[in-house]
Image 1: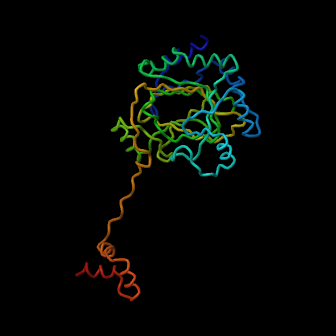
Image 2: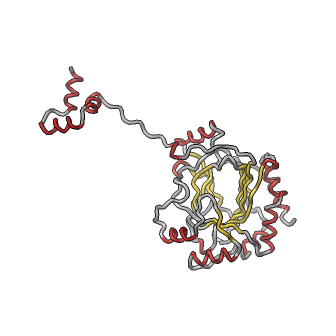
Image 3: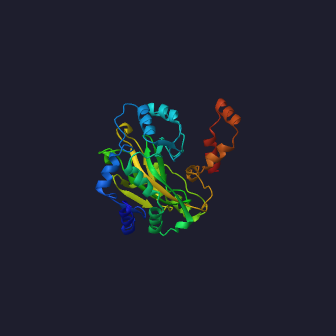
Length: 321
């Protein structure tokens, strides 16, 4: 198995604890393999003058649009939206400002990509990921694949559903300048004033976690490096997000992507982010305000018309008596 060394890298990798426990391995694939992969016809898709041309090429190279968080599956709706990004239509989540399209490679055409896809889907590789995080492999299922995410793709800060046991992402972007592009995964933590949301998740382990607005969090790390993998087991603090804004005609955000899923459902639906908004308490009324609030609207109008002293003045007299 020509990719066996990737399992060895996973097994020997150290854990990083900032901003949460995860494994990151730079230069994950050997240089020779990486160069072959990003040059493969299924990956190096670029040089188009329109979105229509791009979609035609992606379909020709074996990709199909899939359902994916932060995305829609209607190509025509996406094309209309992408022509006019000022549109405020929201199709995914109220914590997001945009949306995109995700495509998964379902028909490999080159031997290197075929071999890589077979390795990613192998029980041996998936079991090594589970073992690294102390997950019982027989208790999970898995999905994996090579995916491209078009401009506009957005998934706001979230720690992942409790039904997910593990996730991993390997950057295999074909554009030589991809590290400078605005389509990378952010790893975040809550701003201090919103730590109560994480505390709620800690105290309600049977309720699922939600996406939250970007303004509630601070980015701590961005996975810009090409040929790098990040692996983590979702917890209440594993907050990550993406907001893609880039020219996908010259090369798309491309990843080897996969998850392990608990066989047994771990949680029921929990509160959405709107339920966590703390509304300010109404100001306390002064004595004058309390007296004024008791006066019917019609009486206030009559008082004003006849020039009778304002109720605030009257309330002041009551207070002094």
